[in-house]
Length: 476
Image (cartoon, rainbow, N blue to C red; front, side):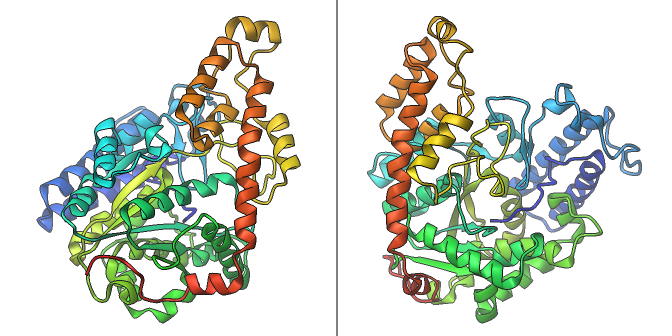
C-alpha cells in the first residue's frame, strides 16, 4: 500500500506536529458540529491530546494555537541518545527506533488509539472459526486492531463481511517481509470463507517514485504473481490495479469523490504531513486507498450494497489512511472498516531500520537462490550472540535483538520448537551459527516452494484474477 508519511504523530518536525494539532482540532470541532457519535468524538479528542503531548515533548512547551514553533528542525533527530529521540518514528517511508528490540508497539497502540489484540480476542477468533489461531496471532505479530469484535459479531450472526488489503508495487522483486500481510490474509480468507479485494496502488507509486505509468503498471502485474503464489482462491479474490480499475468502475470513482469532498486539505496535511510543494496527485491519493473499504466500490461483487463491513489486515504504518476513512465513513453513510495491524518485519541488519528494496542485503528476496539465502543470513543477520564462544556459553544470547530468532517467530510453525530454541539460545546451549543454520533450513524450502508456485502463475491466470467479476461466497 501507500508510501506516505504518517504525519499524525511520527512527524519529523515540531512544525508538522503543530500543523497536525491544528488539523485535528478542526476535525474535533467539525465532528461536534455534525453531531457525530460520542465514540467518534472521544477518539478524535484522545488523538488531539496525544498530539499535544508529543508536541510538548518535542518543543519543551505547551501548544499555543497562534504560536508556531521557531525551530522546525529539532536537534532530537540527530542525537538518537537524547530523551526526545527515544520516541519511535513510524511512517510508511521510515521506521526508526533507538532500541535494538525494535518499535515499542504498546506505546504505538496508545499513540494511534487502537486496541491490543489480547488473549481473549485470539480465543474468540478460535471459537468463531473452529481453527487454531494463525501463528501471527499466537505470537503477537498481528498485535493491534480496530473493531475486530464487530466483525466476529457479524460472522457469528451469519452477516457478511469482506477482506481488503493491498500492495504498493515499487519494484519487480518483493521480499519476505512483503508476504506477511498476504500470508495472514490468505488464512483469514480460508477460515472465514469470505471474498477478498487486493488493491495494487500503481498510481501512487507513479506519483511518489521516478517511474513511468507503464513501469508502475508492469510492477503491479509482476507483484500480483507473487501474491497469487501465496495460494489465494481465484473464485473469491479480485486483484486490481488502480490505473486499470478506476477508469472502468463508476462505483469506485464515485466513492473516491465522496471521500474527497469530506476531507479538507488541512486534515490531509495534518494526517500525512503533506506540504505546499507536494503535487495535488499525492494530496488526493488517500481517498483512492480509502475507497476499497466500501462494498459498493465493487458492484460486480456486491452489487449496490453499502452495508457490508470490510476487514483490513495491514502493517501498522498504513493506519493513518484508515483513521481518515473511519472518520469519513459515517458522514457518507457507510460502515467503518475494521483493521488488524501487524508489526514490522525487521531488516537483516536489525530491528532499528526498515528494509529497502534498493539494498539487496537488507532482506531475503523472493527471487533469492538457496545459496544467496545462506550467504545473507550468515553474513548480514544481526546477532544477539556474545563476542566469543566462551562468553556465549557462559552468558547466553539475546533473542530480543537477534534477527535470526525474530525471523523464526514469523516463519517457524512449531511453537514448542521455537520455545526450545529460545531457551537454548538464551542459556548459551545454542550458538549463533547454529541459530542461523536453523533459520536457513526454514527459509530455503519456503522460498523455493514460493518460486515453484510463482512459476505456475501465467499471464492468463493474472488476467483472470484482475478481471472484474462476480465472486463466489455464501452470503446473499
